[in-house]
Length: 129
View (cartoon, rainbow, N blue to C red):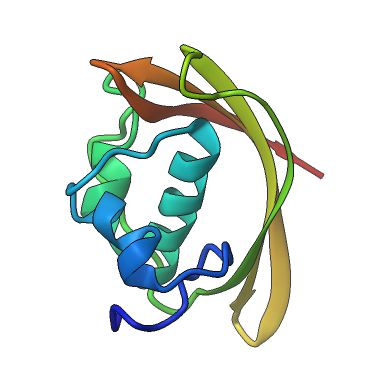
């Protein structure tokens, strides 16, 4: 993704100033929501390595294969609980809109995040209907 393009997470900043440095390991996500946005961006740009690195070590899958035909369209944050700079856990509810097999869809998930070695990581999530 070009550094000057707007970040897929829709915070309104260029990729190079938003999720780009987080995906590249240049800086950690400061909040659970920022980590959620960076993970969405990783799905959108096909960065499976970052998704693996940002998963809690106790829950990380051995392999992760992304569907190159699935196109992530936009992200909506529904709510957050905790997950700030002074918290150890956080929750982010979101809607991730996509296109696959010629049809639009959305993933509605409530995700839990925790700190591991001081950094925010994805713990798990519950997919909502």
